[in-house]
Length: 307
Image (cartoon, rainbow, N blue to C red; front, side, top):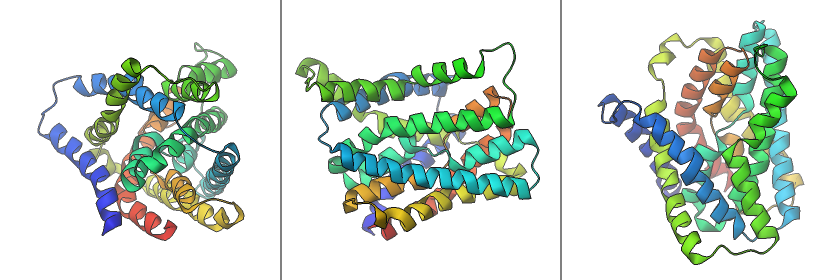
């Protein structure tokens, strides 16, 4: 029951967002503006305040990241093999593979970690976010460039990748927070407190926005690639993590943080990137929606096993 009480609030806020959207509670373009507010202001404020004051061990953090990398790349390889057996065309294969390994660590994993384990895990989880986001973007862009077709009118692939990484506010904010931490710089209270308050608003707003943006109707077109990719995403990475976690010297909290980041559903940014790089955007969108729905059942199991 304690696990349900910890994870249920995350999905109840997602459900609330969907209900409010269906009731037309939000004005036109409100969600777009809300997403901009959270993405460029609220969440970066949370990450800067969290990482700048975090107490962490670089050796332990590197072990967590290494375990995460094994789980992620293992899922990618598995999905690539499955895509060959399914004989998917190149554009669908790119969306299928990305949807099978790219997780929603920031918008779903981070809130679950905070609601499940509290502030004791929040700082360590925040420190992991920058490497996770960088890994996902590097690997996803590589996969989609291999399978899709970057518009010739746009930048060259390498330039596109660099711009995509260093204009990402999640990466920038984590790096700023880690830099402040490294030089032992404490933000003045008059700056820290409003940023902390702004960050506190980020998590519930993120979850409501996810719910409102979920395209449930699109699941009527769900076919084998959508179902298979969704199941791979929420099962294979955490299973690899569970199999390998014994080889890493991690505390129960550190182990749980890593497993949750591995077990989250597909990130919504998978759709945006698939569209930008000439892969099957609608397939990516369906994988995001279905994996999010299915993760409501798998994440409580994962937390129970991990504990």
